[in-house]
Length: 238
Image (cartoon, rainbow, N blue to C red; front, side, top):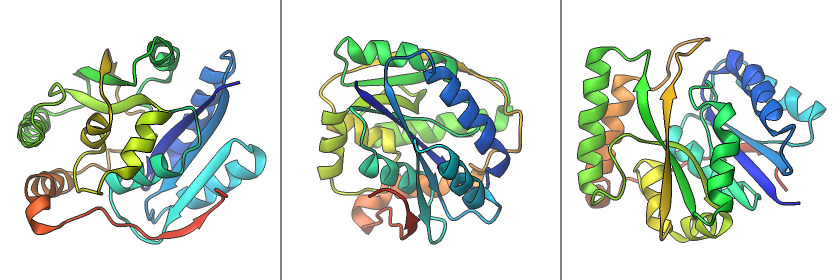
């Protein structure tokens, strides 16, 4: 039986972890795949770490990586990809704005032979007009720097073949959105459009400051030598 790994970064998302876990395990309950869920706690100051550890004690499919301090979403996602063991690996946000009910569609497109299948945001219901404009400008500038390898509204919501993960691991680490590195590691990819549902718990941790910081690093990271670094404090991945 093939294994699918789901990688999700967590930063002060304690209240979302249990609903996410329930939704993911439900989505896989009728699928003929072994499941692995890799939670990467990105130096949270809330009870995210305790809740993930508790999940791992009752569900052996749960793997975790705990950072010693906050390193950012891109570093957390990269760490999850490096340590995931599935035949295919999905990247998903823990706030359920990457709809779990679409998981079978992503797997189906992967099984058709697509090395990577990216989700493309069709609409985002909880964005303010200012944030929407800011995000689009930032995504456009970053995409320009990456040679327009991906459409502007491409998200990290994706599934990739093990061969892409192996190629990703050989790339030099860069302070750029993980999806662009994944695109570099793949020869061809497909896309699935999706509507982004509103967050039902908590607020987005991806602030304007973090968005602008990522924009700066993505644009000048190569010349400044800025790379995503992280220190693993604890993991149950052997």
